[in-house]
Image (cartoon, rainbow, N blue to C red; front, side, top):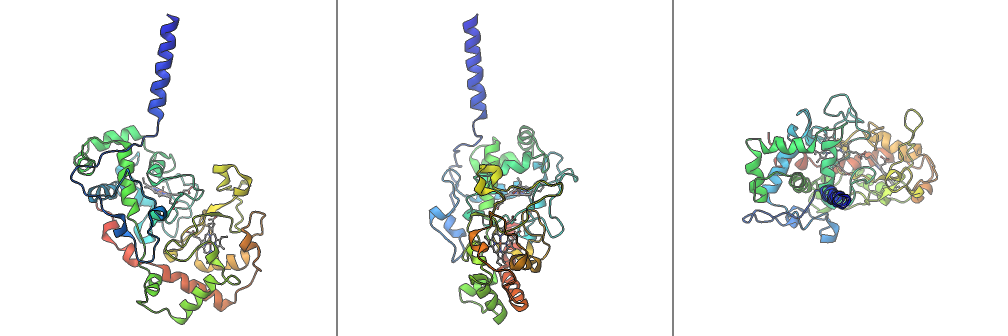
Length: 363
Ligand code: HEC
Ligand code: HEC
């Protein structure tokens, strides 16, 4: 009797461990789907080596997978009360952020608020960490976070699978994308991941200028020089020029991270628990920055002018302040230079991307 209960106990453990394994596995592509070369998505001047890219050999992009992912991205069925989609907070015309009036986003219930500002969510193909604190290591893994989060879409994954499986359209679309009509969360993650990798912005005025197709005005050109100057803007130290406009690192840019009520948002520290990561946040891209107000992880600044004032003299010299910023004197830019810097930042707006119908809501 005792032995039987030990066996029973062991079997239970095995079942529990097995069912808790990552719901993510290599899946078969439908036999007649041709993977699309990722290189065809990479704009001129962007890094293109495989090691630069966030690609998964077990989730190649296919036309059918991307189409399914796009539909899922914009489908309110993904939320518990069928009112909110990924696209409700990641809005194309605001470069996949939530828009100018929302430092924090509303959840599907219309009352809950997210903890942080909705970040510019594009060019993820070049990103290695996701979220302001880098808590998510992969595009696929990230996708279920907002679906189940009670302050976001508040959905039960089992119910979601049932809902999609009994939908008149989805089984056929999953079959097209993945070879059979069985719907799993792993496949939902994979389709979303495929679509998200195609959300790419690389056609701004800055890009055309780099390709020598347009000229900058004198102010735009002066602003670029200030952006790069180690003694003036010094923005380039973290928001690297080139494809990404970020160094993909976690940095402390001198924000006071106190929250109302006396607590602080500890940023990266909350993930690594390393003292040196305290109050560090992922350097965001500056592409499309004129479209993604309000700014910073908590959306505290409304305008680019405010941001530039902050970097000119508003930053705090906390002990974790980035070493390069710590060397900079305050009030180092003239009024004209600050205005030119803002003028340059506006050249990073890409309306080809914000109007691209391949990225828009298909419903
Ligand atoms: C309620 C609004 C809301 C909804 C709905 C939402 N997100 Fe987000 N998203 C956010 C916020 C806020 C963050 C940043 C959270 C943080 O860093 O703590 C974020 C972060 C992200 C990031 C990380 C971007 C980066 O550069 O690090 C990705 C990718 C993303 N969301 C994709 C999705 C997908 C896919 C869906 C749908 C399944 C979705 N989001 C639904 C608000 C939302
Ligand atoms: C030490 C690295 C560093 C330097 C130098 C730096 N930044 Fe940043 N920047 C960051 C980090 C990190 C964040 C996110 C901080 C946060 O939200 O807590 C950020 C955020 C921003 C944002 C808000 C982006 C968004 O999506 O909300 C803008 C705009 C910006 N920086 C512009 C600039 C400009 C202009 C300069 C030069 C004057 C500059 N930065 C210099 C690291 C840096």
